[in-house]
Length: 284
Image 1 (cartoon, rainbow, N blue to C red):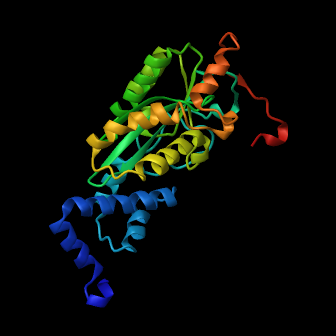
Image 2 (cartoon, rainbow, N blue to C red; image 1 turned 120 degrees about the vertical axis):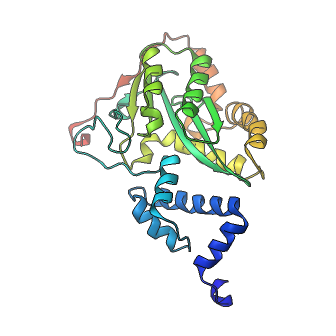
């Protein structure tokens, strides 16, 4: 369209930003999000080049600010287990979840954050799942990515489950999950921390799958305009549909609630998850 009218892309987006700042900001943030997800090891300089191909002429400081707000800054992989991360300076925990053999609920919780693009704004969702049953046991919606958002989801999970010491909590390396408040809350209930390695989203695959299902079956299916509209319906989807009705192939085509109900009928005493002993050739 710009080529046909003889207008440069930069001029078009500059005019768009002046006339419709909300839409322009959302379009820019969406472009950054897509580029960061596609190229997970790219920093803000490479992201600037990527989005420039779509016509966005944006300074590095603005891109850096947006990526930091959305927890999209790349984390470099270090030799051995890193104790700190150069971007947020907080302790990073090794991935112990990958070696657990689950046999009951409340042995392993997995947590994640995602952004949801609505008609008028971006909002963020934090969720905590029970890895054994795939049940969503805690979630929170908000307009920013401060540590208070995932902490609210964690508090909801703790209140509904009352886990015993020995629980393992797994997440990515985001600063929200490495923050002092979040780590201290997990320590208070006797939980151990586990984090995915950099650039390996499949190590938190259960949460990734939940987020994809939520976006495909709820967010994309209804034209939500803002946080308030979404807040009215997301609990219905999570609690009434996903947890109680939706069938999961990994659970033998049962819903998470039905799977947990059958598990409870076995009347087995709870115990922490056991470690899987991998064969020598499986160890990398």
